[in-house]
Image (tube, rainbow, N blue to C red; front, side, top):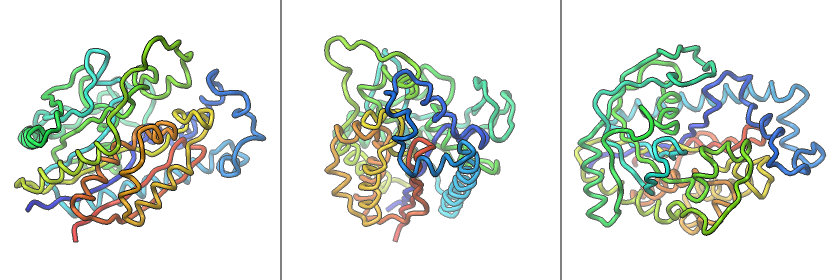
Length: 354
């Protein structure tokens, strides 16, 4: 039986910027015409929100937050290096990047070239944390044989997954996968592990409305006509798929790290909080269940509950949890970060073999 490591982390985009920009989404939210006035009123903000904001508009909290995230990424990278996998599979969401109106698969496995050019800043207009130029290029490795193996075994099990050998609407990786590599290589020592991205349609009915999430804040709310767009896959189905992925790689010749890449509830998706702050209570419920190895609570969480809580991207974690449930693994929690100011909760976890 092949050895498998499970890891969970965030790919939160603002962390690519310097600390002084970490609260940029909060400032954008205050200007949004889609946020009701009562949620913009400081008198109605939660105590934790006010504490993080402090008397310097969140500058101190931003510095501490950046340091904490860097420490957590280094912790996850060390675990990955100690395991020394033959390949890394990453579950991530596609936010109107590779998939547009022409096709939106619930799941898609990418068998990329080995090697392929990685140019994360080529189309970026903002300076990045590492002060790397737009021309900065590295080579990453794909693993087409593993992608073929996984696609074949999942289809044989009845999971009608899509597969792709090249990007569709982007040249490279979507941000969920790109940021995962950048953050795991925080200290720029290189990323030698072949990567198999597996996209999950986390945004479902919100995909075309949100266009990547922040359009919920910046664009006028569209007038709905007819039925809403179809939803993303059900949480329990993501768990079942994760279990099948674990079975497939357990029978393979490769040592594999399975990584769920996502923050938890997002403020700009949480309608019940006026798009102003995340659903910390809903996240705590799943976090406490995770701490206890209570995967039944995760499996019983409905799609409607997750959407209401702004937990769209947690479908990536659902796949990981399903894989770990299949393998009988319990988590080691390295950090769980609750934040009102920085838009979402972040959990860093590993699921080592016994």
